[in-house]
Image (spheres, rainbow, N blue to C red):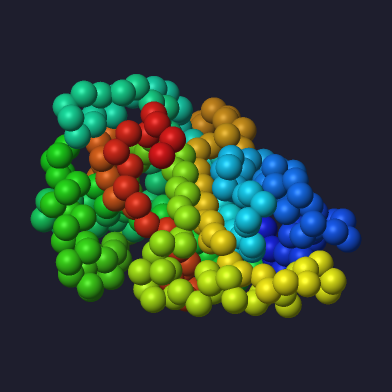
Length: 288
């Protein structure tokens, strides 16, 4: 499920991260910037259970660095039950340039919400629910043509109601094939925020001293960088593969959904209808 490294006591944990658990965290950042970056990365690595191993790149923190805000989020949902698994085997995934790569696919058949539209198909793959009321699902938009992703995404982003209007509403018995993939995305938000006219926090007369422990800094604390990193994993590593006994006379799927070429996906929290991830897969053999 989606995890927030700051969940629980966000301000106290954030302060501990800034100070590295020591009473002189700001002095360490100014005197030994490499140590400060290592402390932050170590904390992110531990908080995300080794899924995100680093957030601050080498050389970003130096003796002139003020405050660095970091956001690390990973999503590793389990959308396959053990009884869902038919087989996991390498298959061809056809890329946009006409080549193909061999990648592991998970194949199974199940009754799922499914829709076939003009030029593309959509399927809903629900995740296993956690210990709260939130429910997450992945929706995959698969163009019929191997090179149809560009036209499909152009419609998605140019028509505001397109996604909602094309989500599946009817259940079908579907033969499903989906590649395993991992997507990693990291960005320094500073320039984007400045382009949005948010200049004041980055000026040296800005003061964020209230965000660190009292006494850590006697000078105004300005914002140097805002880092954001996300990792999304789709795989079955946490699931013990078991043989599935198929009864004689079991009906064959009436529909087929094999994501063996570039596709668009989104992950939505169903209770609030909020999209929390959105992206596309061009080559599942690469970690983006």
